[in-house]
Image (cartoon, rainbow, N blue to C red; front, side):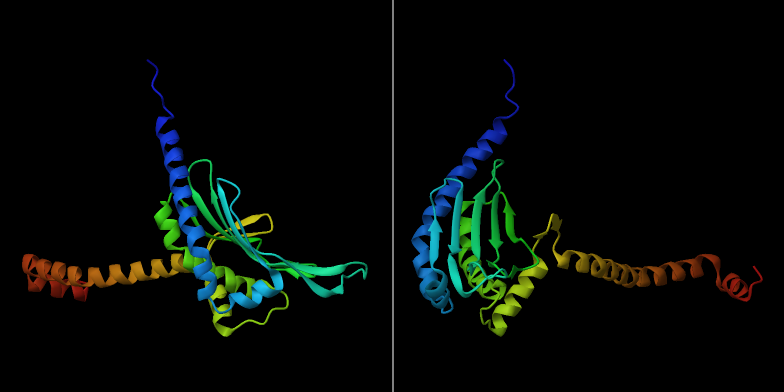
Length: 228
């Protein structure tokens, strides 16, 4: 009998599908509570509208709709519009669950990043659901900060600034690693050097003392004077 070398991958995919369905069921029951709990949501809903797309088995999308900007575009022919930010949960072919934030985009421009990864990997439905409130609050803050006209709060700017610092992003045709990764890479090297220096200092003292006993005081005096 030929060994099924793909059995583990198939099992992982089936388990991931079950977990993602579980997450979606939990999320759908929680969304209204999240909307009511965030005081900044109401104004966005009034101008953009808010939609939940749960039609696809492998996707759950929370998004703000399209608003009129009440003026013409650059050519003066059509009314300028702005599409609101969105939050996407997506189940990949290998069983990984991705959480992605998309910024607002208008006739007149958009943010530098095309989207922000908030998480990707094999996760249980409960684990993904555990981040739902954080993700929803990120979405609301991102909708304000990435909008070309919306008035933002200091807290929203700080929240999204941190999000951009610690998250991987897609910018143009390039995937960018979290900025904090490069910073921590340099910092970790400095910390490791300092740690090793501190660690070696007492070891060096012990070695010197041992050599002093083994070689004798007179040999060390000659070495220091350059006579040995």
